[in-house]
Length: 118
Image 1 (cartoon, one colour):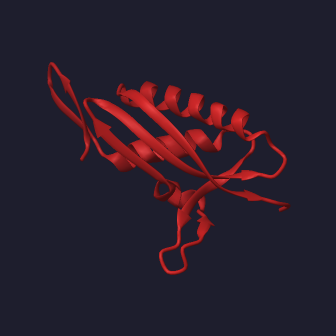
Image 2: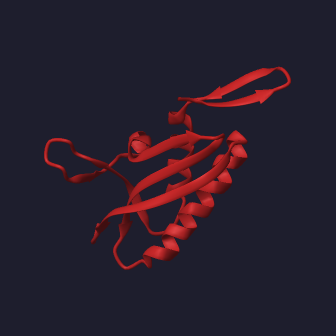
């Protein structure tokens, strides 16, 4: 269900994939994040997504004109997870609210894996 904004000239409808893409690009700006994760249906393992498919690792829910965003991420080994997650939340909240004008209710960062080495 797309997010809808009522303006004096009409209704603006923003698709969930657009919001997910903004959130994904914003999250990738954070230090310590390797990328988004997506669950492989056949074997149940999580895989690192390429930058063209960031929104597949992000779920957007709209309820009562508030957004809930779940980010499934893979982090770099050696970073403090809580600090990186807080940084991701701040960047995503700022950019999504700035670009869409829709208020964020919750942002959940789900760490699906840690990448060791390059």
